[in-house]
Image (tube, rainbow over all chains, first blue to last red):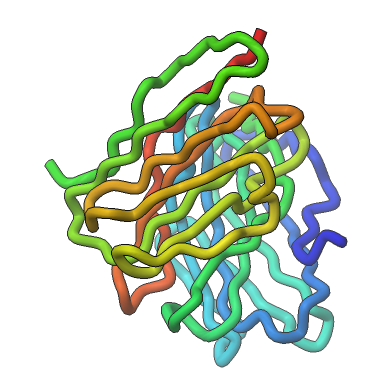
Length: 116
Length: 112
């Protein structure tokens, strides 16, 4: 049973517009959420995270929103750039941002294509 | 520079052979992880280790083994018992009090 779901396998947007990537989770014990970006044949790189005590976290062009009641989070990229084209993974954990037995559960990813 | 080094980057093996993938980190991180990526499957956790000489099974540990004799090293052995070993393998590490995992470049294993 998949606990972290990214229901859109792909998303295409125009350069300069907003990209919105969505993620849903089923485990109500998840309390820390992260977004990773991945290029082909490379390891994922960390983008942004959010704790369940917040509903928004912003870092430059990247903003993550968390709706705990809906068990939903989203990543907004504004403005989108061609270099943002990659696979984006949503991940979640229990026990805060670093307790013992800490591990991340990942979604299947969404391929974002930003067209010039 | 500090980071995580996985080797080899590409590996071909015959069916039935055991294969060991190397993962070394010089970040002084306590925790290390092995994930597997298959097309359309995201990243699935194989094994993880919070400290030296201790490790736990992840969601898909069958057919794999690990060791953690040194803080810097967390090798993964893909045994002949693993039914579908062809995949992209990712090693990661984490500092003790943070939630962010740092990933290596990955190793692509192809079993012929």
